[in-house]
Amino acid sequence: MLGQRSRQKGLFEADTQFLDFVGRDSFYAFLAAQRGQLFRDEDFAGLYNASWGRPSVPPSLLATALVLQTYDSASDEEARQRACYDLRWKVALGIELDTRPFAKSTLQEFRAQLVLHEEQQAIFQRSLELARRKGHFKGARKLKLALDTTNILGRGAVKDTYNLLADGIVLVLRALAWQAGLEPAAYAEAGGYGRYLDGPSLKGQAEIEWDDAAQRRAFLAGIVTDADRLLEEVRVARGQLEEDSPEDRRLADAAGLLSRVLHQDIERREDGPDLRDGVARDRMPSVHDPEMRHGRKSKAKRFDGHKLQLAVDTDSQLITAVAVLAGNAPDREQALRVVEESEALTGCAVEATLGDTAYGDGATRQQFADAGRTLIAKVPPASNQGYFPKTAFAIDLEAQTCRCPSGQVSRDLRPRAQGDGIFRFAAAVCAACPLRPQCVRGRGGRSVQLHAQEALLQAARAFQSSAAFRASQTLRQTAEHRLARLVQLGIRQARYRGTAKTLFQAFMAATVANLTLLAAGSGADLPLFALGACLIALLVRHLWRPGDIPPLRASDTARERASRSLACETATSLKLAPSRPGF
Image (cartoon, rainbow, N blue to C red):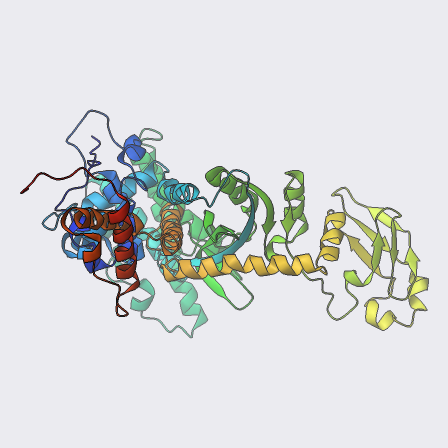
């Protein structure tokens, strides 16, 4: 059942008594000032039963704890300890000093419920609602969004084919042992699979000469034989189960991972199995996190894991949307979706989307154009192995002509069904051209590929030379700055396995990035300071005469000077009823 906090603050809560110890301009004080506004218990009512059970730990308190956990890079156990003993956390949570607000398992279950109900975005959305209340997203304002991506290293162990197959075999052994009601070690020994559970690395335990190709291949053949035999045992076991039952799905999932490793890494030959040459497309590098992928951010920078994509409002520098992509997905994969999501979360229309070269391909431009949106991104540079690139030719789409660097014009356009086409220059024309060594490699004439979105690409290339484009690229750097902030908050390494939990981590990091930005420019302690100043003024009016207020001193801090000035003004302007004599 949903537990709720009282809206009335207590006199003995940490944010009432110890705000000055923590610092009124700190992030912890900012969270304390937002209690009851940033997170409300009723916002999370869908995660709880309406009438059963005891009242839960208030979800507004747990949501604040998750924010603090991300801000301080704390583990679940450390978060529990800090909530019990750290004065800064107690101030931010608004609890009394002797309160131990939640157990480690309570925090974990709350996070699991958010992920299970696909509410990873709920806490992040509250940061944008707060920004809207502070005036950052007014309805008439048009947003300029900057998009960018960075890599997230996966949590699953990445192994070579030998140990990857061994891990898949262990998963199947455990599923079969559970189905048979036996311990995995006992089931493995009975079936002759004991070596897969004997140590941390099957490859490390193998007593073979790794320089000998024949021994390596024989060792691999033994592993593949065991895997095939286990998969047959799974087929027999599933035949005795009800289709799509929990037991059947558990066996199917384990066998599916093992089968995938065999398919992607093993080549079946007449003389026995062997390692596949090259890397299979969409290869899974870890059975412990099957959603991880081999990825690259450049030719030299490779990683195993996921990609984080984010959208940033260039004016406020607030993150408006995030998404987690597969590690091998192109950066532009969900570009339009994060733009639409930004509009939904902020309530403002997006007038332009800014991206780097990864977003500048023809297909992405067409997607944005079809949606009636403006995309500003550099067109990927054209190259031709040292010969004249396509951009050296002047293509007139209306006249359907192509003029080469030497001035020759081709009208020989051969369209194709995909919407693109090829301009061809006659071999005789190219043979007599003095620029041929810089243009043509073969014996025939030069050909120029016409892109299906050629008109969009031409317009983009023309815009690239303008001052407006250079200004937009300066604005786009906002996304890089926000990515750097998320890396500071730990997004480079996934804390959890699976895309859904990694997306939750990304949302939490984006939430903290937004809240710290809002806290830096909000004057979080002003409401409390104003209240304190008014109380001082009331005391002054009752107990002192205006002339008794100590004068300003050169050594006074800015806060003391402001407090005394406000007290003087209030004491002389307030008209209060006279107090009783002798009170």
